[in-house]
Image (cartoon, one colour):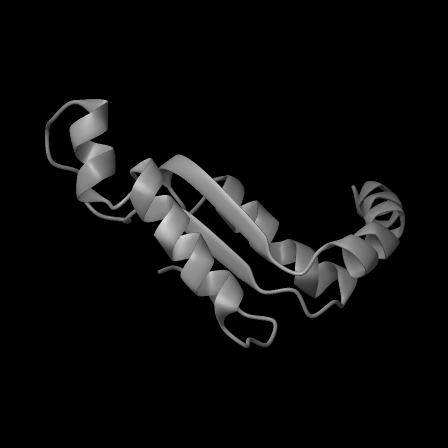
Length: 100
């Protein structure tokens, strides 16, 4: 596992340093334990200053409803996602993880 991590890090480090100003994850599930949690480790492992925004369902018991209703309640409509990403990318930030 350690050698896989080192290979991954050496391959992506230069890419992220040259081409990535922000990282945004969007998932229709809770962030904790999901893809967003894994992506949060990337800047730290690569020792780069890239802020991360995780968008997903809050880590709480979810109400009953259709998928669309739950996503809307969590602010995960296309319009709301766009607003949150615009706000995130316009801020001056250090390497931090955000959940707006």
